[in-house]
Structures are given as C-alpha cells and as structure tokens.
Image (cartoon, rainbow, N blue to C red; front, side, top):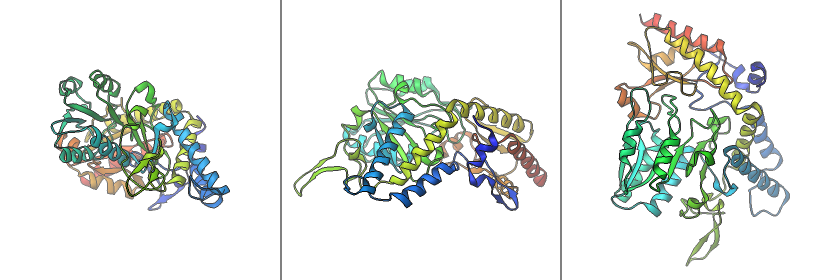
Length: 405
C-alpha cells in the first residue's frame, strides 16, 4: 500500500480543521470519507454526460447507460458474484433489506412461519422483518449473543425448524465491531433448505467478501460506508431467488409491457430498479471500489489490524475505561465507556479537541439492553487513520477523565 501521507492527500476533508484543531475522524462506521477519484467521477457525470440511463437514443444517454452498467460489472467483480444480473443498485443497506423483506415475504411467508435474526442486528435488519411478521402473522426468532459480543451458535441451531423460512444476520456488529461466524450460520440454514441474507454494511470495507465462497443467498451493503457516495447501495441475490421474487416497487424501467389489464415485468436486474436510479452515485461507487482494489484489500486489512492493535493497547491502558465487545479480534471499531461519564459528554469534549467519534446506541438498542447500558462511545478507524491520531484519542480521553474527576 502506498505511503500514508499520499493516501491522506487523496481525502481532502482530512486536511481540514474543527475548533482550530486538525480533524481526527474516527466515525468511519457511520460513514467513510470520499477520495478525490470518487468526487471527480461524480463531477464528470454531471458535467460531461448527465442524461437519464437506458432507452435513450442520444450520445450522452448511451454513455451514461454504458458507465452505469460498467459500475454493475465492477460490483459483480468486487463481490465475485456469478452473474451481473445478480447485482441490484439500491439506496443503501436499509433499502436492500426492505426490498428483500417485502418481496421474499410476499412470495414465501405465511401465517405461523418463522424468520430468524440475531440479537446483534442494526435496527435496519430488525424492523423490516418485524413489519413482515406483523403483516403475515409470522414469528420473529432471535439468535442470542454472549458477553464477548458473539452469537451463540448452539442456540441458533436449536432455532432452525421446518417453519424457518429465512435467516438474516450481520457479518460484523456495527455496535461492537465483532466479526460473526456467518459461514457456519449459512451452512446450518442451507442444510434444511433455508436461505440467508447477510448484512455486509460493516464487513464489506474491512476485508474480502466473496459471495460465491460464502454461499449467501443475499448480501447487502451501502456505498457510503466503503468510500462511495451516500444514497447508494447494493443488493446481491442469487439468480434463483431474484428470478422468483416479485418486484418491490413499480414504475419506469422495471416493466416489459404495460396495459390497464396487465403489466409484465422486465428481466433481471432491471425489474428491481424502478424509476430513475441514482446512476451518478452508482458510477461513483464503482470508482470507490476501484480505489479500494488499487490499494489492495489485503493491505487495507493489515493496516487496519495494526491500527486496531495500537488502539486496544492505548485504551486498555486507561483504568477507568471499559471496552465493550471487541477484544482486538474484530474489525477496527471499538466501543467503550468511561466510568461515571456519560457517552455524550465524552463525545462532546472529544469533539472540542478535534476528535470525531460516535456516541449512543448506534441503532442497535437490543445490544445496549443486553449490556444494561444506554449507549457507548464508538471509535471506528480505517486505513487513512494514523498512530498519531490514536494517541490523540488516548490523550483526549485522559482529559475527559481529568475534567470529571
């Protein structure tokens, strides 16, 4: 991987200041910053070939359509999906999960059926399934977690039954940074013919995801968490499932023929991309994935492992601090509490020191309920962060403790 100073130069926002101090950005689990190549790609779309994709007969529409489909192929390659039509562009992880929950539910879920999620899920992988269960009079079953922030597989196996219709689990906990055994979860579900959706929002940017090797039936992620534009996302689905599911939304481009008597739907992937999609965003997302590939995903993982190790050493050296979940074997995300100090207070003081962290329940309230806490301070690192910035975080925490002592 190239020199860290050159990498940081690719991200203009990292050279800015807040409150007169250099920005230290440790909120990457919420959204990552964008490299120049992504910003320039989006600008190129709007200044050189901004035209609605598909069906156009003029030159810039043809180019926009071509670049959009190149972006789909880039995502396919990045995930190692078998077919390009298995890649659906959406608004993000939330949009992708809602699409599957609605479409799969309409086709396959009946009264008394069961949907399995886990205690670790982000709200976006809980609420859509709850809505489905309420609508269809089905039951939501929950895989329990343990104190280490890991799912209890022995209890998961007991939940699987002939009534189980789908399993939806996170690849990596957004609240804790713990990496879950999704391969084992998928294998067990497949042994009884049950499909699995994997929420890759926190996994896609921290390692190599090969959907064929993983053998998941659906995989979802957001562009803005992997250095791409906000409002972009991906739903990967095996052809055998997508070809059977009814569309989630109706509108232009997802139809083959429309009459007042009957509408027939377009082929994959277009039947799941109703209306004008965020094509500049999708093209920008492809640029982000290209940037990640250029750095090397193995290099990124090694860099982030180094940063995580240093952060764990710094934080465990502070007696008043308690790390929740991640013990250093997860991704480069650490949630913690300081004895007697509310997470919001910690976050606000760190902000005044130029250090951006996330505080609260992180859209994972059941996780907080498990630990009997209101929330945590979450510092999420990525490859463009530095050892020096982690040292500043440690110094900042010491200042917070001193202020409240």
